[in-house]
Length: 419
Image (cartoon, rainbow, N blue to C red; front, side):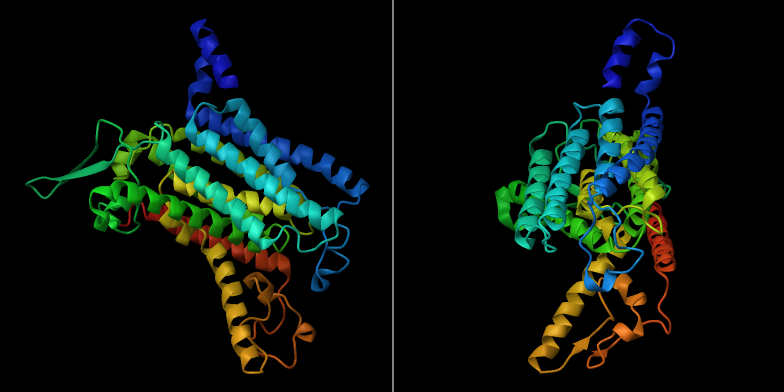
């Protein structure tokens, strides 16, 4: 919104009016606005939630003096703190900005309905798993098809020329093209063409490649949003992890939107992707502001309103900048959380068929494995991983998970050079 006002002021030759045309200034303004808005709005909403008794329906093993009575649905704080700065300083006619705003609203509504059912209907299961999957698949389908149909969603592919003196020259094609390629980490000249994967379709390989791209988009959005939802189990855990991931994604988006950096790093150049940077900075600021209240001991929980939205945003940003494969590294914590649940359920069911109780971890998702007290263990059950000798405090577990995510984020950034 302010962008269009400043464009009008530029035509009037007002000194300093061009400042808001710079991506760096708009991004910094977005992170400051979102951080302040999140911190200010948090105090207001927490008092309101307490007054209305909007507290989370806790599971039996979570019912203790610290968690009981803590307000939930704090994800509303994050969503508002993202939307308002983006509406103010973002270019709203940009397809990437529109998709990210739509993702925030879509996943926010899904999470809000889930929290509403849990809180007001006293149904701890919330929205059924099938409905969540349908909503996540719908978002992935919408994003994938929009990228296929939009004339703005184009790229200038990076080309490497080998010279006679064993040197290389990287340049980008002059004309932006509608390509469905993604980046493969650790491999030189590392663009993977979905159409080439579907080359067995002959003359229809381009169409088949886009179908594959849409399917990958659906899988990424669904997996990351569910992984984020599972990771939201301790005070500050998801907000901190997601903020670190947001920084890495913002950096990846910036170098992809800057032709000079894209040429230097030998990656595809994405015209218009600077709006992803602005959004990512608002995302980071909103999470840091929310941590003011969500750090241990939490004064508010984000609920599914926040966790599903956060996961959806991370997945969609990665798709927009064509770095979805890198999510395996960047979201390593989410992958571990997802796998721990899948493995635990499969192993337990296998033992049940044999008439025995067996588990891999003390409790899943993975972060709960480290803080479950010995007296709460099922004495009739065998465990492959018995966990620490003494249960760890959740603040220590959260900090260690942040450290792991930080390491994974650094490795993700290093893939731009390690090839």
